[in-house]
Amino acid sequence: MILMKKNMPSHIPAIIAGLLLLLAGGLKAQEHDFSSFEKDTELQDELRFLRLESYLELKVNVASTKAETSLQSPSTVTVIDRKMIEDYNFSSISAAVETLAGIQVYRTAFKQQVPTVRGVLQDHYANKVLVMINNVPSWHAISGEGNLNRVSIHDVERIEVLRGPASVIYGSQAYTGAINIVLRESAAGEIHLGIGNKGAHTVGTNYQYQSENGVSIFAAVNQERGQRTSYNHTDTAGVNGNIDDYVDSLNASLLIESEEHSFLVNAFQNDEGGFEGAGQSYASGAGNNHDVDGILLGYTFSRTWSDKYYSQLQLFYDNNERNFSRSVDDDIRANVLGTRIGGNLRNIFSFSDNLRFAIGGS
Image 1 (tube, helix red, strand yellow):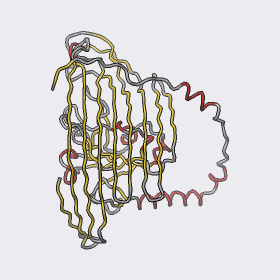
Image 2: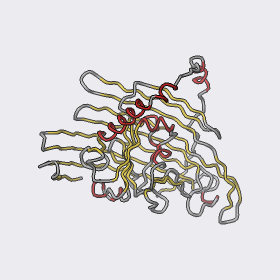
Image 3: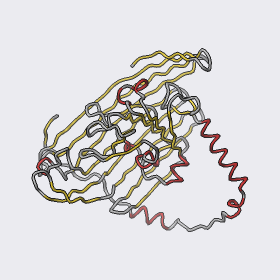
Image 4: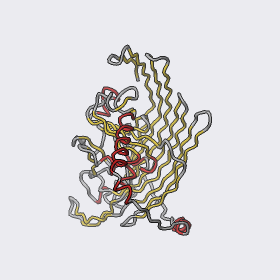
């Protein structure tokens, strides 16, 4: 840990009025008649069956060394797909995963957006639940926590959640579970705007390009200002004051895929209001902002050599930084920087539908 001075100007601007005015002229209320659909129970049953059939055929990556359907998977896996995200209008990945049994996203005295599985929480950090983006792992190399809000919910195709120990596949960082965020696979291009209460708003865009030779490119950038919640707090020294609690975020993602190659870039910067540690004292920086940011690079090569042999090579670079106040006047700040460079190789030999042998290393 290094003590340093650092001024932290606001990096999340709140200018979306112009975009709203442009959109307002093109918006027109429309009325739809759903009476025939409500009466046609046969059509409703058919749609439900098609939804269930497509879910059972969906291959997930989070529970095994190779993509498998939910029926083939040996683990407890839940998938929140794009249609569910839109139907329930989830505002964030955290809000989506919290609807699942056994999953909670906590706010500790030191860190926000802390995902846990079955209540297992190590001190202040979520270093027992692995957070991945398209199966590329990411966590802070020193304090161990992952960040769910490094990707906007608008850029998510599905969220694969594995509950229970996944350390056999991913190591000790997935002691209680793993969350795999899969980026959009069919986004023709969209701009989203949102306004919430207590000063919250969001703006962002994403776009996907599909070439004739099978190469797809997905790009997205998002900016969000979180709700401002003020708490009246008296610290251990008896000092009383107000603390603003919030999360502002800026993130960008780029995914380039072909039949055998995948290249991922994700960068994020979060500005969090905080109580700053177990003591939660103003003298130690309570009430000042807490910066969390990072960049993730991942390359994956996968090939099915035959009906019995499959291999995958993955390389990644993961850099995460946490910068937080350590004094009442914010002149002294601590900077915790962690970098990981790694990779893994997997070779899977399938002797039959019920017998598979895997060998590899990381």
